[in-house]
Structures are given as structure tokens and as C-alpha cells.
Amino acid sequence: MSEEKKKENVASVKKMETAETEKPIAGAQIATKKVKKLKRQIIKGQAHISCSYNNTIVTISDLNGSVLGWSSAGLLGFKGAKKSTPYAATQAVKDLTEKVKKYGLQKLEVYVKGVGGGREASIRALVAGGFEITLIKDTTPIPHNGCRPPKPRRV
Image (tube, rainbow, N blue to C red; front, top):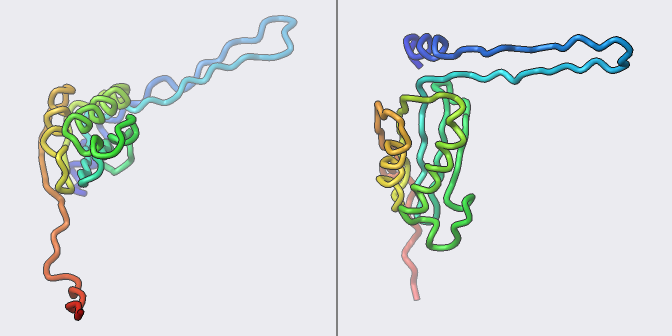
């Protein structure tokens, strides 16, 4: 990863309030303590879309690769042949955008892998979800004369 991306990601991370404590009341034996969770505000992230013939899996991470949330068509209850449909892919992206809203993501780099039916539909759903897409890259693995095929069958 380049130095500029690291600096941009570090600059975009803001820490919220770390902890609040209440003073114990006179005569009370137990002191209550409220601790707020740290919330990272991330401006730019990555969306990895894996589309197979059987399912569509969508993952959103920050620029370092830490996963912020993921969803798939099978997770939402689609079964069988319905998992690989474009509609199931859009529903998976909508579910994911709800999970990731709390981080304040605005810009996404999209990496698409596979040959399934939900490729274009999931990208359209990301745009409809309010994300600005800065990059779309196809990372489908292509063999360069890889494995040797099996010998022909003799009957």
C-alpha cells in the first residue's frame, strides 16, 4: 500500500469519547462505570464482491484490510438457485450498507471476483446505497495454462 493511502486512512480515522465515569453516591457500595465504545470514522474503504454460480458474498473493509462488515445471499435466507440471482445480490448489499452505516463510509473501491449473476447488480446497489465508487476492478482468477488436464478416458 502506498504511503499516501496510509496517511489518508490514518487521517480519516477519528476517535470518539473514550470513557465516562459516574461518581459513586454516598452510602452506595457499588460504583457504576459507563464506558463508551470507540467508534472509528472511516471515509474511504474497499468492497470485495465474490460472485459464484451458487452465491454472492459482499465484504466491506477499510484500506488496511480490516473487515467492517459482510453479508451474503445465503445469510439472508435465500436457498438453492435463488441465491445466485441479481435480486439476492442487491438484498445482500442493502443489508451490508445498514451494518456499515455507523462507520461513516463515503468512498469505496470495488473489487469483483467471479462469474455469477450478481456482479453488476451488487455494484448498482452500492451506488444506490449512497457510496461514491472510485474504482472498479475485476480480480477474477484466470489460469495461464495451469494444471495439466486428465488423460482421455478409454472405454
